[in-house]
Length: 538
Image (cartoon, helix red, strand yellow):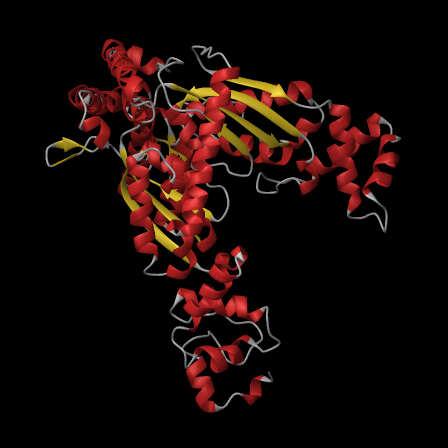
């Protein structure tokens, strides 16, 4: 379609649905998501321009989008077109068990979750702490002990917020730290600041970083039933799969979430999620339940349970550095090798002296100027499997990395818990241990009848088993990101240990992880709070 062929009237109509009517690059701004997606999909099946398709096929038929998807998705089963519709939803008041199930989805969805570092969780609603009360538990003989256990966890958490904040500020007094003086732009100790604005900014930075550290320490007391909020952006295909997974769950909370999410998505991308609880969806849900039941049955016959107490970060599976070097260097050279097969390149690479191979890796290390300069995809060709058992609070952070394989077990009290040293120093070790012991007693009783539901009562401090399989490129991203100064001390130490273990088995390849921070910091959030305040003042 020649753009000049649009009439003045057509251009006026098109301007309400496209960002421009003249250029060969334009945004689709037609209000209905279903029409945007249908236009994109129809685009691939005709030689017409998109704006011409809209005029000829969509303008006069308001149901064109729905009709298109009914045909393509339901009749033809072309799932890929469901990725062309997007939606944003917010879920408020779901447990930390349910939010992890949602965030297990790796492709097509992006999440933003309420933070335990910046937000206190001690508020009550109608006189009750905000934690999930599962119907099966609350209608059973365990109701009172469950309620009491969760309440006790919140009580210990709540009453110690102010004492912990005060302790942190006593241990790390503001006078110890330097802040920017707006007069000359230099860093100066707090006592040397003269301008009222500088003093105010310094206090904001200090108070924010000390409160964050206090809440980081105390979050281990929170039970997994704690209600959180999450925002989700994603495409129709990913949402449909999410609904199917939630619908197959043994937990009532997750099944109800599936119904609620679908209801809201029907207001924007109805056609994309229509199959989730229909014939197709029900069959898929049964399949997911069958997979879980079959896995459980086989495991009970073949594996003897042997829980270990304590945290674990252990590299359990990797290949020799020689093999890894050959694969990565072959992949580096492949793109630039004219008309040469991978196999042929590999044969030649194997003949390169080891010293030269190491220098090649060093060259690629050298050109990385910052951690955003990620290694190329060639570095995806060697893998590491880590056996991990760390506190659940920390797992929640590492769980957000999705470009890897992560398998996890149910949350229990079997593996012990993390007791932060600050808890001891503050003198609340007795309360902390009483809370953990109370939780364990309650959990052990509930799990006999309701193993899945028992997870809700378990505190963030309890160790949680999972494994990660990731390639060197993703390891570089995860470890560099999770060792930055403002990171939580728990996952910083785990990421540091992961680096040390990779470095031990792959001393040359690990050099690509150029921006790993192995230092310890007093106030992890301090420098980040300074940067935030500086931006605010500009």
